[in-house]
Amino acid sequence: MPGHNIPQNIVTPLTNGPSETKRNQAANLQQYIQDLLGDTHHTFLQGSYRNHTAVSDLPDVDIVAMRSQTYSGIHSPYRGGKPTIMWSDIFSEIITKLRSQNKYSWQIEEKEKCIKLRGTINADIVPAVKFHHDHLVDPVAIRSWSSERLSHPRTHIANGEAKNTATNGNFKPTVRMFKNWVANHFGTSDVISSFKVEALVHSADNSNFYDDPVLSFLAVGITINERLNPRIITQPIFSVCGSEDIIASWDASKRLQFYNQFNKSLQSAIAAYRATTVADAERYWRIAFNL
Image (tube, rainbow, N blue to C red; front, side, top):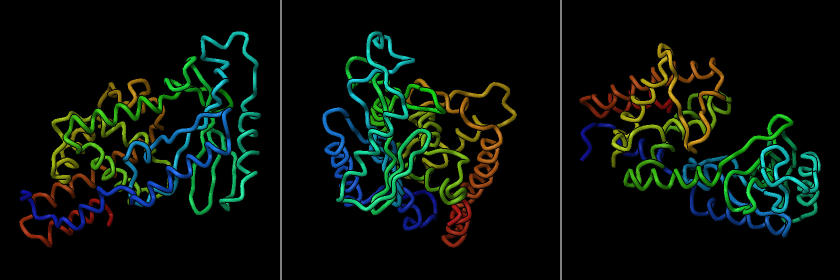
């Protein structure tokens, strides 16, 4: 039995992921896009769906579309002697093939880092090129602000799986709780990305994850709150991939906005945990998650 009065029926939905139907739809979409692009590309799911940290109503699926015979012109040590292709052409090539299909009715929009598909199933297609000879090995190169940067999507997947195993399966449900908290308080604003949420939760020690999701939220939350305290002179490093510090790419004003709201919510969550009646526990928990 939990050592608190917070009703399970308002906690469990915060830990749930997408239904099996949605997961199958995502896998089928990725395979369909692979078939559209053909042998020139290698596609795979990344992000929340692939990492099994997506909330139940995640609006889109992230799919990497790697040009499997093209090396990064900036980062790869093997680029010498290889034909050069512009990122605009890489994007256009994929868009042309996406428009050639008639199975899905979707709108296609080219963005800086991805191609957005909006329809019955929403997806972000991330064009990529190789770093290594083996296209199955991280890192990959993606377009970022008219240049290139390296990304480690499969390392992200592996590290998340390892963390989940080390925490008796409690890491991923805890990530989903934090993502629901972010969605409830900030909506679609860009205060913090899904990737940054995972990195924050991943940074907590394994001992902070419990079978009771309420305890996990509190223990991990206290750790995050302490490490993000703006009075700390030397900011800590947060990374789920072991290679990218999210603090370096997180706007300071947005980070402070996140910290201030989370600090308030954490106090309400603690009050819910300490409440001696179910009514008070539920009231404080709803305040914490803006339910």
